[in-house]
Figure 1 (cartoon, rainbow, N blue to C red):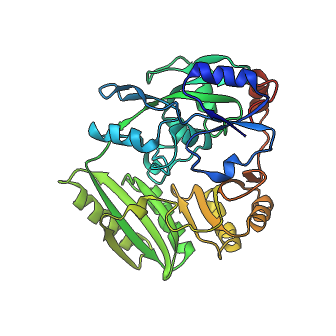
Figure 2: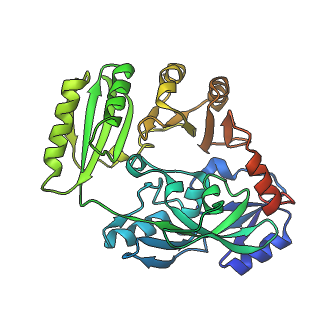
Length: 354
């Protein structure tokens, strides 16, 4: 049941105080996260949108949680800046949902994920209390940083109403490269070589292709130096890895999009490490998939979520279902978090937020 669109913190506080079990929604771009029991009321934050404060000279940005990611990107682009964690689904997702699901894109490879860029947040907890955590400047006091704890929380500890990020200057030129390898083993060896290289890659993804494995590399920089950097990078890979061929990619939006081409009833994010990939990939070799951030995240599409769930449980890997009909979006091996349970008891003792 939907409780209507909420437009302010005061409305959200009243909503929390007057309902039993509550589930937060933003732009509803991730369907698997919003299938709830009939007694759960939806708190729609899409009305709480807009930029509160943007200081380009201080590289900080504060926005309401329901703001569409594409709106934020457009404002930053005008100042030559960007969110380095590269939020996914920008045309559809809200920034609050992006943080709650911890969804960083391929360009997070260079500087890190969402936790590295969240400075502070405004929240309403399960008792209807509104307060701020973290700060609005890059240097904050030491201590437990609840704003970073909320990253990936799925809205189950407190409802984010506004968020403050540090932003970076974006490079004026981006060069994409596709490098072809004959096997997964060769592609992984190339990934390990890239990680030891002095070249700072913005994108380092890889995926199976019709002729082996394709490694997607992206470099950002300035027009007068980037072509030479790209040339040096390819030369290094030819000399030190089993590279079959390489080509430049011009204006290909899919190169930096780990979800491109992943069609299927279910879309799943899996947290993994490069050394776990050979064994895991052998088990999912029939599925559309892509490994991003140097092999630290797997994205898969499947028609059989039950079979994938069994694989993740056997391999003790955690997964998050983003698209498709599931009883619970968290699948696979989920680690027990004593701290999370303690925070839940403090912020939502009546277990209202689900």
